[in-house]
Length: 213
Image (cartoon, rainbow, N blue to C red; front, side, top):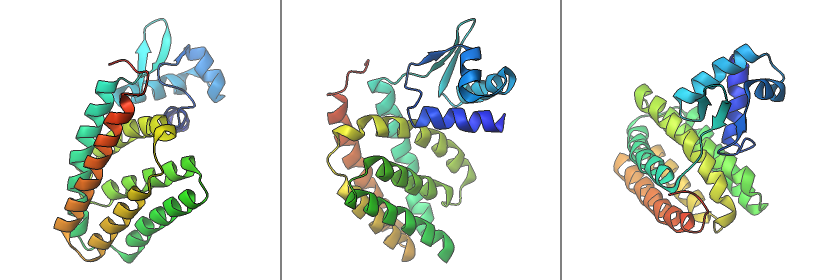
């Protein structure tokens, strides 16, 4: 089941399976090259995470996205990430973990230099994942990871509409510096400003997307 779950989730988050896609259980099993039982179990797990809807006698539907749902997910994730940034900077994380954060931003910089938006999005996702996983609160991490996964889908959806996100790289690097200095207030302030700017940008892009309200 873990293999089916991981692959199905990857296809959903990468939008290979686009929001609203409908598939019969047999079709999905063939697509994944697996038997129907692990696929069914994976779908149940993903339904609990809000990424799939199981439609009785009609198979599965990848959970569609609406403008309201996107904004609500972003609002919740903003609160969780700001708290994670503050907690992370208040800790004394290991040099190895600090290097992981730095490597994610380096990959973001490299992707922008090469004009590779998908590579940038993957590195940005890695940074935000590390931010919540290293903050030291297991329950915050569990909740935030689910919202981060949902947010990644619309991050990819809006990617073609975004200006080159240089500011994200700069802000993430500044958060890392605050973490290095054990300065939780600065880390919180920087990440709050970053998330608020993204919220404004997202609202503008949602006006241009043909999505249900």
